[in-house]
Image (cartoon, rainbow, N blue to C red):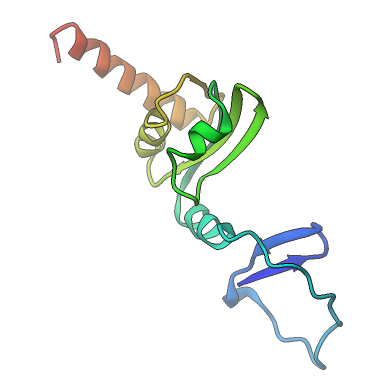
Length: 132
């Protein structure tokens, strides 16, 4: 469910199984404009992925946004750099999702992601040298 979180002063998704009925009807609310259309897919995608990372990508946000599903959050940092909130069900899938951005990036963690990137880099070096 999508709702306005007064504590966070913003739209967010809520799991229906965690909502408790308030009796009587609860406090009144102020109607607001509709939330962003991608809020629910982004929330569902994030909830299902076990591994997440925020990576700094050396590419304009608009360029990266055009390459990823709407559920992936891309934040512009400046005209030539953005932050991508990537996810994957395994550290290796997380690494591959980041590599598919097809841009230079910086990842500071988590450690499982860094290990997966090192393993993939080693395989790529071996394959390029004809040893794969």
